[in-house]
Amino acid sequence: MNTGYTHLEAILMIPALLLNALIVLTSGAHVKRLCASSLFIYLLCLFDLLVLTTTAFMFSHQMIHFDEPYPFNWCKINASVSVFGCLMSLILCMGLTLFRYLTIVSQRAIPASFPVRFLAVAVFLSGLIACGPFFLRSDNTAFMLRQSGVYCAFDWTVSTIEVRGVCVLAVLIATIPIVFIAYAYLAIYLEVRKVNRFAEEFLTAAGSNPLPVCSSNPDLAQQQQQPQIQPTVLPPVPQLLGAQKGSKASLANLAADDFVNAGRESTPYPPAQNASNSQGQESLARRALAHLSLRAIQAKKARTRAQEDERRLLIQSISIIAGFIVGWTPLYAVALYEMVSGQYVSAEVDFLAFAFVHVNDVVSAVVVLVFDADLRKNAYICLPCKKSSK
Image: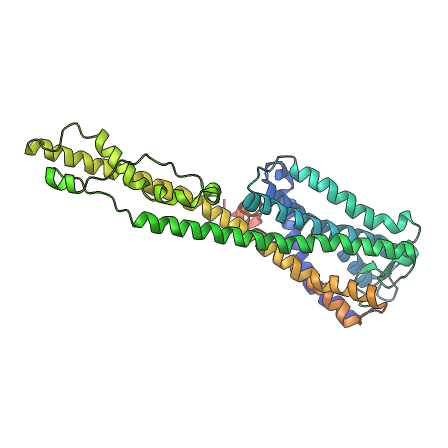
């Protein structure tokens, strides 16, 4: 056993273990109240904690029984549980990405049963791969203590048909989420860019149609008379992309239409009456303008809050997915290299690839606590400092 690798692993593993345990334990009683995206993130932390727990068990055994080799039967169980947890994390990352893709790009309503059905498929596929060597009675050749000595996993160089079939299927299941995640977030980026461009064109068109100025002067009113335009209702933000280009002008005139209609409904006198009627008309027009301005401000604040929430959720998802890909890509590359070449990588490369996984576990937990309000609130309530401050 290389004690240097073991101590470095402890430095990376312990913070990841504590952070993920904090998220999982504090939100376990509130799972039914979590939204779909928060549920996927909670499950990601749960299976990350499962992998970290098996690694911590192996680390504890090596610290207690320093001179004894790690029992091979335990190594097989450790490897099977780790493979199950890793594949579950990958598939759940794809599920979180699929949820964002259907919401933003396809604009479909997500059924309430979607997380449960997706989780059932993920458990079946991951369990099939993790337990496959035991079903095929090839577990003695399929698993090994890796070169770094800090974790157990598949022996990717084995060439027997049974083990090679399980390894190829594992790599294939890991490849599909990675490819889909790259495609989905490219499509999400293009969709968000298209929405922002349409909103800018709409605001530009709206700025070219200023509000008319009400006046009691008949000549000036005749000069400023606008053609009657039917009021146009602004569609919700998810439907902006479905609007035709020919409707931009009518959307741009929405503010002017509201002002004209409000002024007509609230003005009981014709413009050519005496001064008192003119002052009353202008007062009503000012009140109508103030009412429309207040309504516009309230609508803008509501849209801003909704857009801010969606932006935070999107940043959270992208941060978690990006960290996951960066964290697992080195280990994925090691598996591919050993399968293709039939040779083991060095102990240094093997340890470095596994260290990236622990770094991702820490980064993902921090991102969750920063961006996910529900999981952060549950964790904050259960902290001892919160209780002592009451």
